[in-house]
Length: 290
Image (cartoon, rainbow, N blue to C red; front, side, top):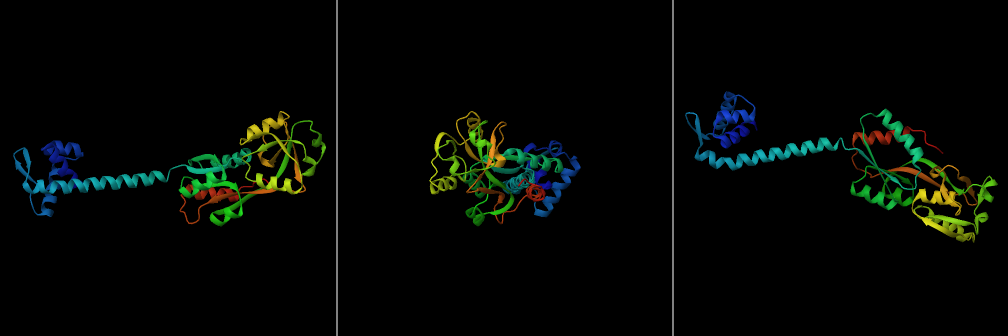
């Protein structure tokens, strides 16, 4: 490749001295390399007329092929460089939007402290958003609620379980109870968490128990739901580790009790980077709540 590079530089400048300067070698080294290539090819590439050089007929016929070899080598180097850079791409983590961020942040802080130099990119989304991005290769790992359909398609690893609680504004009449049954909530003003992946199951339980809920406010955003509960609009069902707003009263939901399992999700058979493998090992060695 060095010899081909010397030939292309000499063709460009028609001068060995300037060609050697471009290739960052001495002129004797450049002329020796060109001569070695000529001997290997069995014909002269340049006519030498004192300090002046000209491409030979053979050199003109070889020039497109030598240029093609050089271009292919550049492409190969670029592919190799991009591959090395890919190894340094941040770990792409997707987190389901209803998962409480405080406890997850504690794990991420511990991981960062013990794995200096590794970078992490975190994005939020619904179950569908995250599974689509996993399938498309846009995420390395997702953290979300485990379900049978998810376990059938992806590789899952349980991190922790959490109960669903009932969240009240301060001084709510049901706040004096240690736990709240579903029937005790019938007719109470309600704040509906539209993004909840278990919403349909909770609504079905209400219908089965003939519990009447009237939603005075609906939102897909967890912060808005908690803010409206705190403002006295109504109560909400929430996972216990997702309650983050100070001042809210939370009580376990019983009869029926509802809980969810939070797990890491990856694509079976997909090769992980060393950084992603380190992250998965760290999730399994961390003391999660619950």
